[in-house]
Amino acid sequence: STLFPYTTLFRSSIILLITLGIKSFMMHGLTNLIFLLPILGAAIASIPPNYTTVYVQGDTFYYSDGVYYAPKDNEYVVIPPPQGAVVTELPSSCTTVNVGSTEYRDCGGAYYQRQSNGYEVVQPPVGAIVNSLPDGAQKSDVGGQTYFLFAGGYYQPFYSGNSVVYKIVNPPA
Image (cartoon, rainbow, N blue to C red; front, top):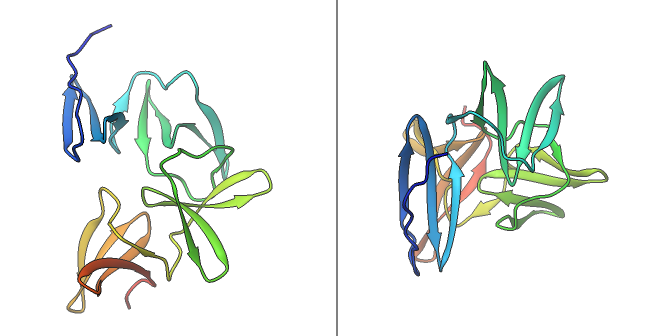
């Protein structure tokens, strides 16, 4: 196994992109904590040992600490959370978002609803307002209006006081 140097990041919000051979990872250093997360589309040789097998409409996926993997050839590819996947645990970084009387868990732009058997990946809820865009949201201009697209959700920016916030809206016509 290859060892690589690491840097402890103190009180920063720096995002570093590290490339190790053909594998890419994203490191977030936030207030003395370091998280090493695979980037969507990254291919890895083996999945973490603490994975859970998840079945969605007959397809097999693997889940570990908020990350989903799909088998491809002799590797595993990091994918967005598949709609309908149910897991028993969510990462501690998830936040609660309420839309009307319905409670969702926002895990970096992946939304979950509590079910009797765990948490199910659902479509981003129309009407939810968030303070920041998920990493990887793509800008899209439709009919002169700017939206950001992520995981099937359209995020529309608007001002709330002096701050820009984002509301999940129905897909523009």
